[in-house]
Image (cartoon, rainbow, N blue to C red; front, side, top):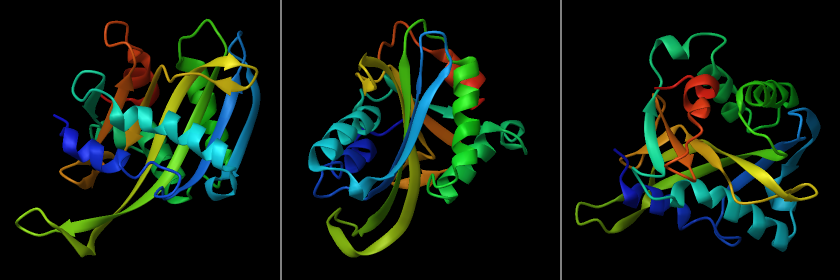
Length: 208
């Protein structure tokens, strides 16, 4: 179960003036499912317009209708073994997306298993959220409670040449549960809850 307020706490910060996203990386995939170029950029160096456009894409995941278009899935102990997607995501998170070899490995897994008959983009965002503590009366306190370091990934059909459209699906890892990072779960977004890309959950992420 995902608490809507947890997700809104993340989305409220996804504005050009408040965001703490550090980096965005991604690649483009052609109609035949072949690699068609990649990028890896310091988020702070983007123009204002580019920041706004990218934040809109990233925000799609946590802002989705909780427990309908955004659901929580578990990584079993088996799916956290060496060589797993869970381990790869942990490494991507810990290096802040700065290791291109790790990113290429991630793109390869997605391209091999994602089902699409059109061109699309894979975008990954890295963020560090200094979660403020809350007093018992729910009022915010100044001191930090936890540093939540996480990734948001979106898979978007292309709306133009190298121009990502509205995300088809994506995920937030680790899951954000009770205002805390949850390494054993992932929050997965599906734009159309009636036609889901379950290959993202089962074959790419290895969650259930």
